[in-house]
Image (tube, rainbow, N blue to C red; front, side):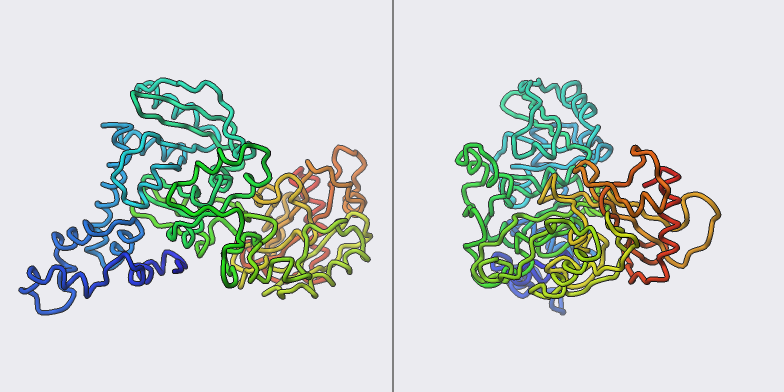
Length: 499
């Protein structure tokens, strides 16, 4: 069973064994349909459409049925909102609008047992509402929970679980009778990093008041889960972590359980958070609280593990000795090491689907060089700047080898940041190495920009991508003729303290 994207959700609805086809639904309600001449006429009767919803156990079924036509869409939106209200009402009582508003203004999401209940349609009660808020949203939610909902702060330790050390900065647990609300505040990297740090793939469910997201839906909907990289590299009690996984799931340490190639599920391949596909299913039912629009503003890429253990996967190093370890050691710093890395790109197996030419300023060169920047393994076409495998030339992974916020080390320019407003046919994005990883100073740029103060040094390699003006994701090849423009851009950006 495969779930490709929200646009194919109707196909998923038609092929899932738990869900009846339209012909079966017509047979089920045949006595009520005798007045209609055309098959499918019951789709235009609200009471019959609602009756169908009552027989659909999973959220994925409900949302697929909702996508059938405008009538099922209208009724379905009310049904899903009712599901959500049924789940959160025990925690907030009459204050559901206040909860939705506070989640909206703090750009918060719900995770944990409530999202699993939303997915399954299970009516069994849950006792814990888990909320993740963006950086700076903790105090507003704290006020709502204590002053309006009258919960008591019972867990005074603000340190989150160790798997969230790199993604969350504050944690609090509140109690009212036998119910708990937990709040976790994300670090500046964003709340989706908290989701990606979840202990298992089955925990990577999240929702707003108007949308639901699920990472690795094919595994989750088949009651399969894989342990996350953070658990495997941690030194904590492993059995205590396993209890996070719901009992009905088969929990796997790696992908050795898989038969056949991993395809898009390969844990070693980088994924962009807004690439809705086999690794991410997102569906909105209320545009006012859209989850999809929140995701589109994120610049997070992630992978689940460094190595794949599926014996049938071509990216398993035991099957493929040409698997490249990135970033290279050492990072290219001159013409000779650039040529070595270009050879690695050319000989990469499986071959990269596509590549672009970019301008690279390495730390020991005397001039910039045109270099190949391929797509990430598994990417079939270039739709986003973050799909470029820049790790062939830059080191972004010393702090975190699994989750990277790409936007923080990029600057996009459509004109010079200072000086005359010279019209350009294209825009340029400058990508730098992480300065907190202490890369060496870039002698080429320091000389080109006449930098004399060490505090103004540009450190590490600098890669410049050319793209259509106003759209950094529509990437085109750099040429040697662009070098003078890029030189001027880098000098101008340095003098304007914008690099």
